[in-house]
Image (tube, rainbow, N blue to C red; front, side):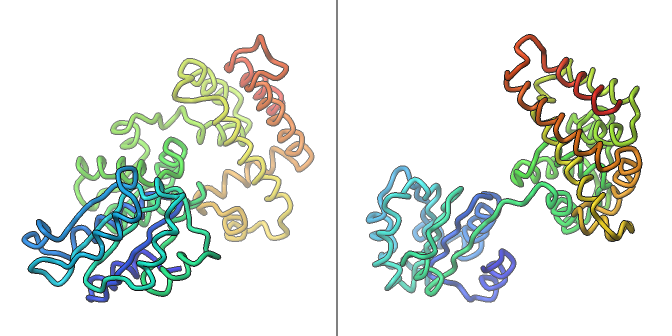
Amino acid sequence: MVTVTQIVSDIKQGNIKPIYFLMGEEPYYIDKISEFIEDAILTEEEKGFNQMVLYGRDISVEEIISNAKRYPMMAEKQVIIVKEAQELVRTIENLVPYVENPQPTTVLVICYKYKTLDKRKKLAKLVAKEGELFESKKLYENQVADWIRRFLAGKKYEIDPKAAQMLVEYLGNDLSKVSNELSKLMIVLPEGSKITPKIIEENIGISKDFNNFELRKKVGEKNILKANQIITYFAQNQKSHPLIMTISLLNSFFTQLLQYHGLKDKSRASVARALKVNPYFVEDYLIAGKNYPMRKVSQVISLLRDADLKSKGVGASNLSEGDILKELLFKIMH
């Protein structure tokens, strides 16, 4: 499948395809490619008559085709961008006749967010042949911290691994949200700055000391006092720290710890590679591995499943979220 870099490079070199079908679960790259095409192909003077933005909820496939068949005015090409094209999911295959014989002077961009074409059907095969079929896939959360690092490096900034992890925990794998927060930071920080947990706390409002990442670390260390301070903070700020998220992240950590115990090679490089974590965090797993042998880790995963059920009201009708978490941590750490 073609990459964002390839698409941008080809357009810059004048290798412009008649159709760009941008689809997939991650809207960030779909937006970035369509914005680049919107800015790069026509001059400002040409855009007035030859650039059009349509919306899937307001238009039919037949109307898109009709517009695409028009000739440009006083320009070599016209650009038609169809946003929210996923609204046309029931009729999108009706594009087939146009894709079979696309207008060479039209650049048609279809933004088909959160869905993908069936690649076994004719439309997907034709687009791949006549234009560009781009699939924007969601990153797994364990890939987002590295994405943040690369994104900032391209803008000549650095980020502390813990600061990156704080952003992932707070924002998840929604790259649009992540890039928006990073853009805000780059406005207030001079180029070349290193983003630290303190900067994240001061500018985005994520506590560097009271977050799920720190809780996971303190549980791994069996630091009972600090872990209890964190969950007390969580109980007082339930909207920002929902129990279901805390359970999910602890479950992810102990599942990785189970995997760690199964490794024959427990060198730092091997652990980082096998668990798909930044080498900076390997120490957390080495410490937790000593505190929680494999049998205990299996018990903890079972405890987390029970707590998940209780958080959904199964067998814990009288317990608050804070009480469920306190009970869980007591059982894990004793």
